[in-house]
Image (cartoon, rainbow, N blue to C red; front, side, top):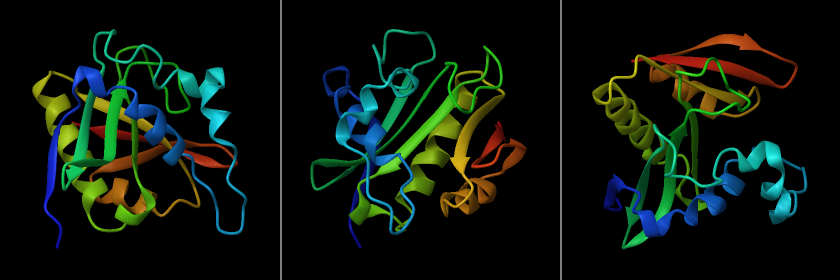
Length: 158
């Protein structure tokens, strides 16, 4: 079992969120991944642009052997999971080889605690219906409050 450390993202590390934004894109089996520059689209840049400069921007990372292998971050933004201007939206991802090992659950759980301590009452996220992470979010207490053809909008009460 690997030793995973969860800690706050340091200011000088914010560029790593670009990598994890790309990793957060759900790619169904058999589908060719999009080019890396897809994250430059405005609807995706909302997750990372000037991260750390807005009130409520918070990020945690998972570190294994001194390397960042996963991240969870929240910000109040008008993204796919947007509920209102007081509810932070989640982004979470891991490098492929670190998935399905409980690391994402730990990152999410620690971020929910962090948000609670910061005085938030809820957080939201959007997740593709076919993404197995839906089950993890449900186990953490998040509930589906809306959906469209492709994804669920989930609310996590704190």
